[in-house]
Length: 430
Ligand SMILES: NC(=O)c1ccc[n+]([C@@H]2O[C@H](COP(=O)([O-])OP(=O)(O)OC[C@H]3O[C@@H](n4cnc5c(N)ncnc54)[C@H](O)[C@@H]3O)[C@@H](O)[C@H]2O)c1
Ligand SMILES: N[C@H](CO)Cc1c[nH]c[nH+]1
Ligand SMILES: [Zn+2]
Image (cartoon, rainbow, N blue to C red; front, side, top):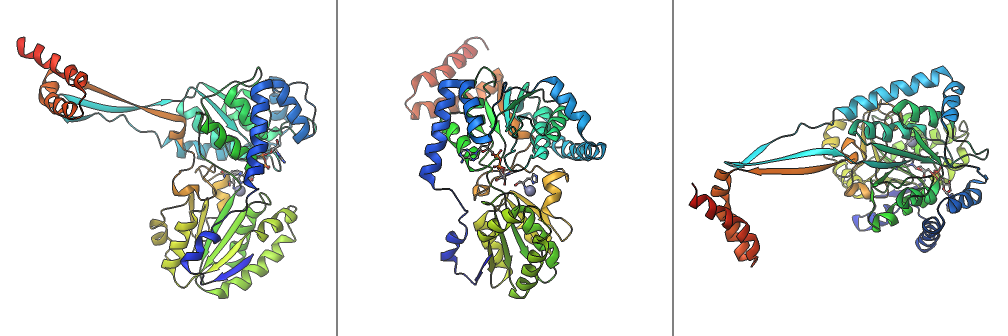
């Protein structure tokens, strides 16, 4: 992790750069995958799976027997953990339901907004380097609570052609029945265009590597809805003398182990914390099976020492981290001033891992600075809001003339006429 001491704000944009594949290469390889799937459907999916996942599949679909066998194979303790996490995620997301609120804007003019589930949704579950069954809960639970009728799940198969049993168990637990063995950009293409095995959906959700994320962005340009760009995981830890170096190091490593292109940031006001945190990182790394991945991610990572808390906060809001951990005194006050972050973890006993799995918040979050404008997945992500209005005779008498005046000023006489014919009728027949 390279250290930057008192970098001036004009250098911050560069410090906020995430590690990224060369854009032209990434775009052209993903476009190539999208075109192949659009043209050749399942045939392309099978070829691409052989190429990238190194397995020749007979079928892309997971059958009911496979799902049942996965449930039997999983240890009871893990199944219980999944059920507990699912219950918390459900509690938090169910509380996001909103009552329909009718507003009378002018006497006789009533307006309201109603949330309606998106009928067909696709969820992507990463499985390249680790089988992220927790993501099944994060996407499947709000999809079910919203009332989405058709939910299709895609995840890459392993080299034996199977999907990890915990992914299948979690899917069954949240009520997902349509599961396809396909990963990467090809899975996004399949859900965007539809193939004989993978149904076309209206909105695609889910995190993934840079190929998956680019594919989502490209199909969005073609008119398909996506949740947000949720690429390689990242965390920013803001720490002061009240922080525990071992906790800070563990939290940084917990995201560094996701992938070589993950980035972790440490923001301090006092450089004295740096040495103990670095020593802890080295000590803990030796215990991690994924230490080689984590080391590569650490090479993309930064420690930034800034003069005071306000500057540190300004840097956080400029970086717009996917996850922000506040290991500082009076963390609540700083939390209240955060304007750009996916999810915030307050205090020494709130590691990001709690939100990754089981606190109840959603872990599908915007990366790469997209937290400046995008929110993480929520119940609302699976809904669209339809507005309604109902105007009575009294309402059009009161508000119609306002509309007539505005339509006339916009030189749209037919709009004005739509009011006038009604006002004339009311005048002749009061
Ligand atoms: N932002 C979030 O909310 C969030 C949440 C969880 C995980 N993540 C991130 O998701 C990512 C998961 O990545 P992953 O790779 O383990 O799994 P993945 O499922 O996203 O990707 C695996 C697929 O990538 C494709 N692929 C691999 N190399 C390729 C290449 N050279 N060219 C084209 N396609 C290629 C393959 O088809 C493979 O099936 C990690 O970066 C992790 O940090 C993000
Ligand atoms: N940290 C990831 C989001 O960036 C989510 C996750 C799943 N499993 C472990 N972590
Ligand atoms: Zn994680």
